[in-house]
Image 1 (cartoon, rainbow, N blue to C red):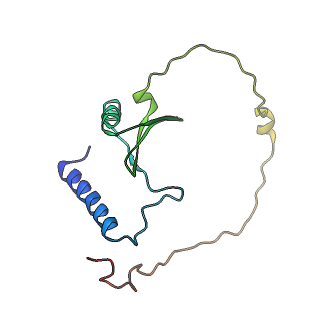
Image 2: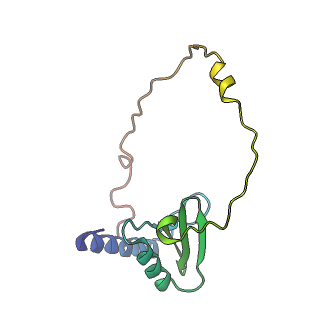
Image 3: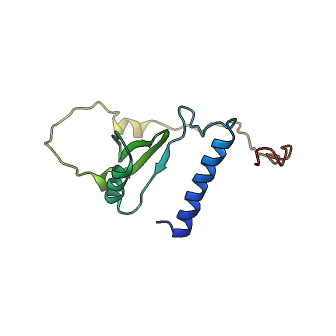
Length: 145
């Protein structure tokens, strides 16, 4: 849970980001490689209550998406995409409908244990990254209004 000060700073940062994007049309929208950035909300406490609260405030159609051990609620405030990510076992009830037997083909563990191992030598690089200051050549007044 965040403190009231951390919450206020985060909200102020979002307003500053919105102002920067509005007053600087040359700025690219935050991007994930496929689409504009989705803001992820990951509640750690009271996940069921948090998910319900977000479902109430997100306008319009929302998508529910189970994903492995997670349950995602996807919506948007107009063009600002939101995804609330919860642990599925915290917000859903697991119900066993029945059982069934399945047959699988798997490697024989006794044969795998009997396979000998070999030692190989390979060349690997030892590297260090040296990055010059990213803004060293930038105009200190660029983008400031």
